[in-house]
Length: 142
Image (cartoon, rainbow, N blue to C red; front, top):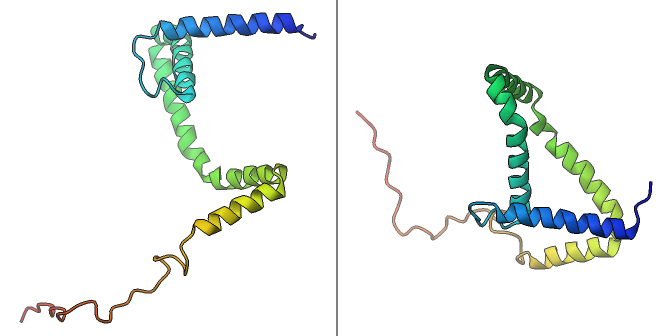
């Protein structure tokens, strides 16, 4: 079912009006809430609160048990170990969609920003002439 452009515009206007009413009803506006991520987080928090509040009132022990089971599953599955693999796959997919000229320009700009002659961390420390006095000998108990 295809939606006409007038219907789409009307629905978009209604959605924006609902969001504006919701934002006007917020008690405090923080710096985080002013960002799109903060607004999305606040919307998710309100939706979760509305969904879980009746369950928590009727079955509080079951809700705590479900939270404990979910936490145990999270710890046992260790999804954070998959992040490097997922990042590599997503990086390859993103690189395949970008034009090669953009990638080349980005790498060239990154290399141009690097200091000449390597970084300080790669250089071996030089100890000659740095200290004017000899190092004290370690104290040995007799």
